[in-house]
Structures are given as C-alpha cells and as structure tokens.
Amino acid sequence: MGDRSVFERADFLSRRRARILPFLGVIYIAQQASYLTMAPGPAHRTVDQLKISAWLVLSAILLAALATNGFWLQPREVRSMIDDEVARSNRSDAMRFGFVFAMLTCIAVYLITMFEPVAGRDAVHVVMSDGLGAALLRWGWLERAAHRNG
Amino acid sequence: MAERLANCLKEKRAALGLTQAELAERVGVTRKTVNTVENGIFTPSATLALKLAVALNVPVEQLFWIER
Image 1: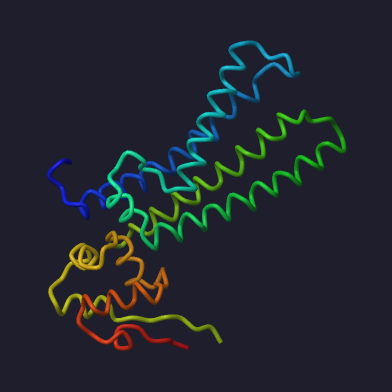
Image 2 (image 1 turned 90 degrees about the horizontal axis):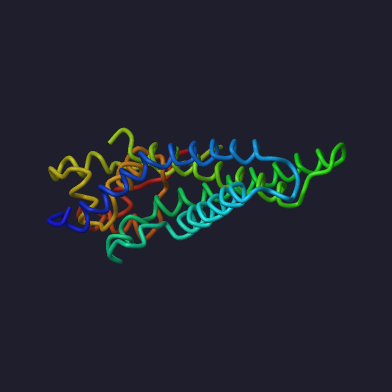
C-alpha cells in the first residue's frame, strides 16, 4: 500500500470499511449472547468480569470510531479524505439511528422493570449494546450503498 | 410538491472523458461521494457543488438545478 497516492489509499480504506462494518455490527450484537448467559446477580465470576471488561473496551473503541471516523494510525490527509461529505453524513445518520434505537431500548427496559427488577448494570449494558450495534449496522449499510452502482 | 436537486454530472464528466475516480481525485473526495451525487442519493453542500463545477469547467447552475 506504500506506493499508493492519498486518494487511492483513502478509497481503498473506505471500501474496506464498507465491507467490514456490517459484519462488525453483527459480531458485536452476537457477542451479547455471552453476557446474557452469565450467572445472574452482582457477584459475577472472574471470567465474567473479564468478559464485561472486554465488552466495555470494545464498545469504547467502536464508539470512538463512530464519533471520530477512526483510522487513527493513518496520515492526516488520508483520514481527511476518507471523512469526506458523504462519510460525515453517513456517520451522522448512523449516530441518530443509534440514539433512537437506544431510546427505544430504554422504553422497553423501563416497561420490563414494571414486572421484574432489572439491575442497573444490565440495563446500561443492553441500552448501550443495542444503540451502538444499531448505529454500526446502519453505518455499514449506508457506506455499502454509497459504494454501490459505481 | 417534493423538490430535488437534479444534476448532469455524469454527462459532463463523460464528455471530458473522466472516470468517477479521476473526478473525485480532482475534487479531493472519495469516489463514493461522486457516485452518490451522480445518482441523486446525496445532496452536496454548496462548497462541493462549486468544486465539482470548477473541476468540470462549467457554471454550477448548468451542473445542478431544482426539479419539481
């Protein structure tokens, strides 16, 4: 990739992101199955604590990528070209979609608490996973659509 | 009635013998941005519309117009 111009490199990375994002969203959401199968209650085993920590780190990285466009190790001019008008518009749309999805999940969790108690950490986990997962899937969908019919 | 920003980007680009990638490089965006503008999926900002017009050497009002 060293001989490529800034434009070629940005285009290559943008296409690769469009291919990867939907899978990343699905994997992220599927990963929540392991959280749901953990022993209930606040006293989780060490292995469960590790799983939660891994989820938290992954969520923070994905959130940062969504908020800043990612590609932190790329030169500034490449990052700037990848984050052009369409990319910014797609990211904004994805964040709006994720926010609405997170709020809908909040409503669902609130309704559930009327019938059975939900731990604070569990509620946060579900809301954050749903919101971020929905935003990633939306982002991937929009990026793929933008690259189509070229 | 719904309004949309129509364009003849594809025709003007083809007339100059440019590919989407070549036009994108001239303007400083990725190819997908040119693709989405051409297909009417994305409405460009005034800045991008002017850059595209300059790159294709046509007045911006010949490149974009409002369709009702």
